[in-house]
Image (cartoon, rainbow, N blue to C red; front, top):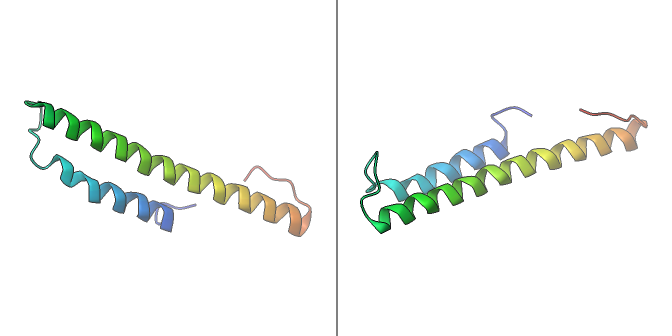
Length: 78
């Protein structure tokens, strides 16, 4: 699986769409409770986007391995 896959593109798109949450947060400090919550929210949503990407890679690997097993009786680790 290459970095230019649909799953990778979806992850990058998701990360780009949530980074606007940090537009009004100062670079090196959280000066208000709202800034702190915005950073926490960004971290949470970033984690979710990366987790979805990893899950899609795992499903792709499992599907490929099952396909090789059923099509040619080949057991593989990919």
